[in-house]
Length: 359
Ligand SMILES: Cc1cc2nc3c(=O)[nH]c(=O)nc-3n(C[C@H](O)[C@H](O)[C@H](O)COP(=O)(O)OP(=O)(O)OC[C@H]3O[C@@H](n4cnc5c(N)ncnc54)[C@H](O)[C@@H]3O)c2cc1C
Image (cartoon, rainbow, N blue to C red; front, top):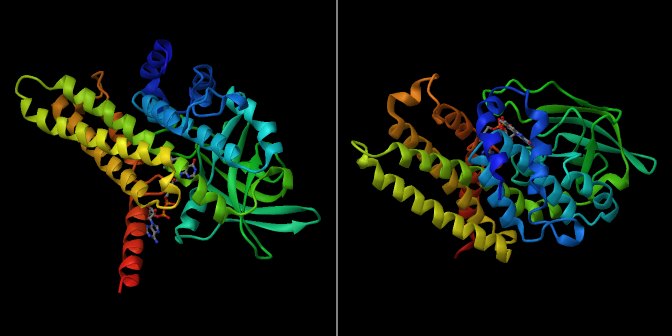
């Protein structure tokens, strides 16, 4: 999927993409040039056809080289998915080509909305009617792929007068939308991750992705989460490959656990792809939540195996090893929304509801 030149560029610059933002401007154009944003997008709309599983595999492939690049990819591709599933054809027509060719960045500030959907927090942006439009106020505390060169970000907003929340697009340079400096993160620093302050920004109906967040979010959640699973899949595969390469004499004791994690990974990926293909996660998301939790565990175990196979060399900064970066990258997996804690809580809640409903 990734051309040799792009793989080499990502490998050569993975540390830099993790450590600072100097190369961040190159990521979206490079991924676009490789055609990656077109995977799983209908040919009639300028894509390469296939389905969302092709995009998940591509995110996994990039994640095996650099999680900063892969998460940027996720932001762009998830935004593209929102447009594909939006009833607002005009919005799609205005943005899609530029997102597919990488001349525009797409970002998803929907963690807050996903937590809202799970009953964890309230929406952090309000929409007050002003004539035919709305006035927006609030914050997006985290958002990746906010390219200073330009971006469109999806957010969910609460109508002050009541009614279903909206999912809408905010644009760079729009009056009332202010991007912070990049957040001071411990890793993934080349991902253009910042916050947004929204004060009196105008929202027109033309920029509404969906009028009812409560209907739209559960519908896009399988793809939102499925694409995110690509991060764990790619990280785990790469760490297990490195662990296997560093195995051998004296470390054969690691062969069995490496093989066991590979087998578990293949089986979870298989179930994930079946569920994404047949649409069952739309009405029964529990299996998707469990897949995401299992992948998070496998990614952590894989990085530990890479450490154990690398031994003390993995602790050196002056060795060309990948462990320390993967360890920091892996720390992102449990906290990205929906977080491991959130999903465990959600599954416990659903199990309790089910047992209460069973006579
Ligand atoms: C590098 C990076 C990039 C990011 N990019 C984006 C992005 O592009 N878009 C975006 O929207 N967000 C993004 N985020 C935010 C991310 O997805 C999470 O929302 C954020 O890390 C959650 O942390 P928090 O501090 O808000 O969690 P808190 O709300 O402080 O909660 C702490 C933990 O407890 C869990 N929790 C809280 N309440 C409950 C409950 N009632 N039941 C069960 N569990 C609960 C949370 O899920 C979390 O795991 C990014 C974060 C990072 C680190």
